[in-house]
Length: 390
Image (cartoon, rainbow, N blue to C red):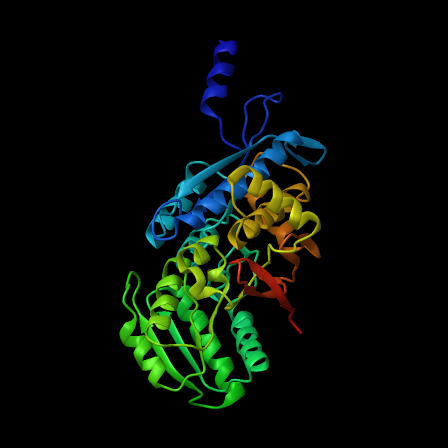
């Protein structure tokens, strides 16, 4: 009877932080919530590839060491389909059914904001590598990010354009139905008009997700007398906007944000994007040290240079690893261990990521610098300058 009961326990209690026998290995489950399909599958691909590289290192090391004990690690990957409702469903499943210790993602703010609500309500630490909208972490002690915020990014871009080109009249084109571009457009507009006066954003045009014809908005922008166009859109829209603007006679700069960072931006846009600038989290061209080592490994395995999503995912996973390692021990109580990891994350100081140093000071938002990148005549993302919080 005793032998039978033990066997049943081994089958019934295969949860990540529970076991019936003292000699049974606890498995640390890490959730990955990413858009494997949908509008931006390249974002999901970069997330998955970076996670697989990280897991390779963990397996080589024999697992994650906590309190002198090494625990094996398992990735639980769920497809958010680039939809808010799917991202919520994925996080809910990973928390309640898979019993993950921590979740990495979602990436895009339109998914990260609602999924973050679930993670916080269920007291499960979540790190969004790429979501820059403030609402992702606001009043959510269990939600963190590995990137800077849009209230920082907006002024960075407004100041860069003003200082670099001496322009005083700007235009903005953004997706009004998506949290990230809508929020960043507003922060940029506010920063620009504080610098150049009310009405200096001479055209503020919007469209809706999945629109492909921007000729009406672009015609208004060209007629407005704007000297620069700012468009904080994803790679699948950037190419259409820039190419259509050029076709309509636009000759001035088009400036982007960190959503431009995918390799797909240049592949789809071609020479129309050469010479343009955007803000982002790291520059692959000319990278050194640990950043170069990651780039080389990723490129060797996957055939192309990793974008900022992949780099930030790597940093987010290493942040999670650091927090797990410094949490003290794994108690076997999933709720207690999630809280211990959350508390450890909140105390991370001077974390040396491949996208820059990060420090958390009581919130889920790191103090971190931004990078301005120029798209070269070879279509490469070249480091141009770094901008850090004051």
